[in-house]
Image (cartoon, rainbow, N blue to C red; front, side):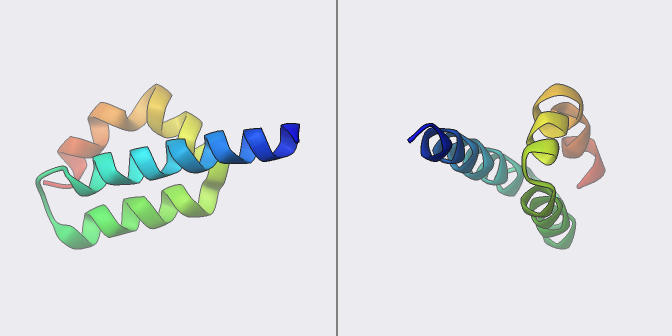
Length: 62
């Protein structure tokens, strides 16, 4: 049961982060690349996104 809760939290945070990236203004291909990287890297990608890259990605996709 605990594994399912951890997985569910990860899925919700991943969807939230992907939607935040998708709603940024900028090049569509760059946004898709960041979303795919986020999905591939799983928890590590989530930690990097929320701790270090959240503000930087907005600049990179323009």
